Amino acid sequence: MGFWDSVLGSDKGSQEEPQADKSSNPFNVSISFTPLRLSAKNRSSVDLVVKVKNVSASPQIVSVDALLPREAMIGFDPACINKASEKRVGEMKPGAILDVPITIWSSNQTKEGNYPVEVTVYSHYIGYDKVMSYIKKSTALRAV
Image (cartoon, rainbow, N blue to C red; front, side):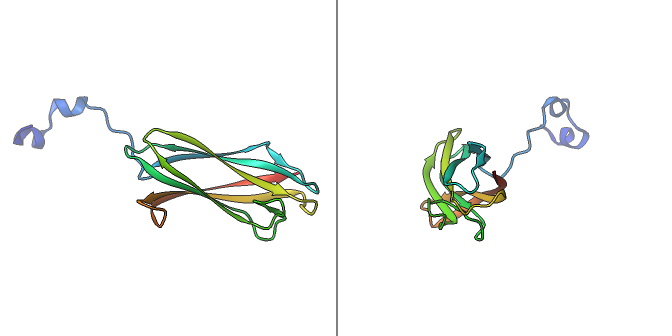
């Protein structure tokens, strides 16, 4: 492209399609529950399935964190004491898709209602000590 083409415009530039809007996030994240609901006033469990897809051009070291409300009688263990969970997934190749299941438990003291669940997917640098980027997603788990 010459000087006058840059000043006056060029026909070649008008034929190019605009590039898609690129995000700085290296992941696409979706959340689902299997089964859909938790049993209230009964000991039961559901799997929180976090689906992570690496959309970047480089491998990523990944971990997934999930948080539950402190006052709720649901947890990541059968006694419903643990309200935070971390799963270290490891390295994901570019374009790889991974399902990370995290079990959530209820007890005989669990009340009916909707419980917020916060999931954070981290991209790490070299080890798990440094975070390059993260994505937060929130959803609600229904107990009936």
